[in-house]
Length: 293
Image (tube, rainbow, N blue to C red; front, top):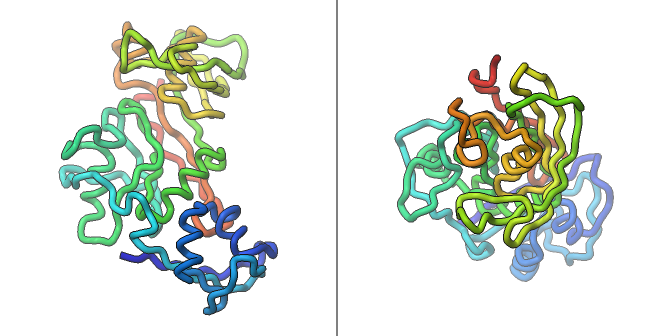
């Protein structure tokens, strides 16, 4: 199977070599660029040119990707036709869906069904698209989830995440109220040696973790808080908020005394550059009604 892209460079593109355009601007991997080069599957104005050729605004770039270019050309998820996804935005390269609380991002066992990846596989039935996982939301976290539709854009989106180009904003309702409106939590997170499901501050194999929060509203015994992550550790928001005495309402792991389910953590906004493009898109996921007062 092959994927073909035909891109005319807009007025906003500055002169650069085709290699820099592919690797630094469009964030393709060295491995994929190598395959494009040796198989002459990158054309500038309908001709193959060396990788040090400088491209200009208005040039036509044609790229052809092959199944053999990718380690995982097909995703491992079985299709699930039992539900329809709530689609917030979609192109030929990617889709943003509004994941409900209680549904996993991806299956953990072979032939397991019910995750968003399975549901999207069903949504893509009888098309040339498939669901490729590039980031995840916890099972009890709702909101905007970005999913690739072909293997070409998987490493691009993964690099956008690792380089903090993709911006994600969360909302949560936490126990207690705040005297200050803003804060930064900078505390490493590692494994909880007593519970494999959990993470903890300064736990086993801890990695640095930084969370920025802004209090939007104190609500008597709870507060509505906006979160932006500087790092992306497992359970980061949940562990960090609990560590400062403000666990998330309804969190079954880090606030077990709370019975107000579902968990009040929502992936509210996601902003990202479109692959092979200089334009960005910001998508908002509707706030669940259980976030209301």
